[in-house]
Image (cartoon, rainbow, N blue to C red):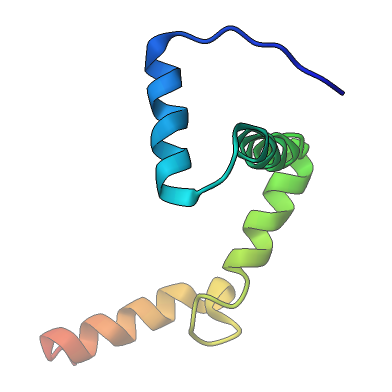
Length: 88
């Protein structure tokens, strides 16, 4: 596919700077930028459920403590305060 595009001086300067640093031609610069934007777009397409699942997957196993903590949290709090404040 052949593309013709009009860009202002600011973008022209940016392309020239990229070319000087990377030694890529304009076509390669545009291709790489499109790849980056495409990857970003694909990440945005995740559904809310998928995003939530990824978050849960990242958080799984990050907390430490007894397995029955949710059931006996009051007892664990009491024991912690007892040790911390020297309570009998």
